[in-house]
Length: 114
Image (cartoon, rainbow, N blue to C red; front, side):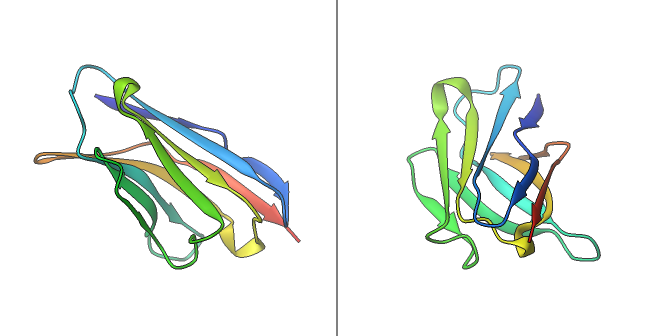
């Protein structure tokens, strides 16, 4: 199983981006999917994740600006990011946890200019 993320890019402050991630291969219903990010010189941090029954968890920095959603049938997860700020600049990594399995995508770069 692999995770393929897309949707990163360059956007001005106040703009929006939508990240997408799909898991390839047969894995069944995944318990948790979501997003982490890592800025240069920083540790990887949670952005938002969602369980298979639709319960989200957001970082404080993401609440009210970002929305995580899932398509369980497609084993996909999305991140709608609005009102982006320069501090949101980072590599965004798709994440999956299913029983004892944890997977990370390759990262997609989001750059927010001021």
